[in-house]
Length: 133
Length: 174
Image (cartoon, rainbow over all chains, first blue to last red; front, side):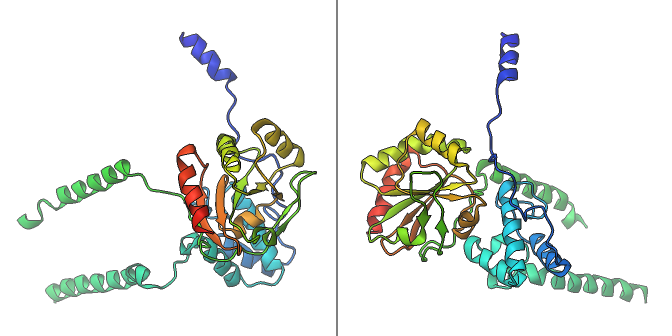
């Protein structure tokens, strides 16, 4: 029985989760203009992959991430600014798709946290210095 | 100091509660399109296979609600939802499709095997329209009203239990 099950495992073909088509042209190829490529790369590192949601599209091997990299490169090569491309994506997927959170009431604690921590640290230090003196 | 004695225990208990909560209610990692309620982005896709027209955004503003199914021949859940789409077609729903990253012969084989409920099928070889729609993968379906406004998005395969909801959304879009 065990053997039969093992044999079954060997013949089982894994299901495909990706297409057979090759990656888009600009998914893994740099733009000829170094300045544009730098802008595209910086943006790709700040756009979240929709498939592997903890990764940026620059890091992800998912096909959709490749297509999104191609989209970013093509739009920037056409002369669009990185911010315009980011806005276009945020319009479709929400602020979630960008790793640079917008300043809005919901994210105020996030932006205030470093300042709050610095103030708290300063307060603690003050207590220490006072005791020494 | 004694007041803080139980602090580590309390922190530990909070971590246990957080972990148990996420295990009991897993996070919903579906990404909804923010374009619901907005006009379809303009697009024009070539036919995904010979013998069937391609799909443009103008085709979808036809005066009556339509369903747009985003699918691919290489996508397993798409095969699972195929009989349900055929059922929707029998109920008189106008269904168009966008085939993602597909070859004409693969689309033809898929339709031959699973049935063809589609009026038009546009081929989206590099997922450009998929991204423009705010979709995050296959299969997904969009309910489009007669003026070409996206009225609802269904993420994942349409299963028999989803039919009532889809029909209601199409009715709402009239």
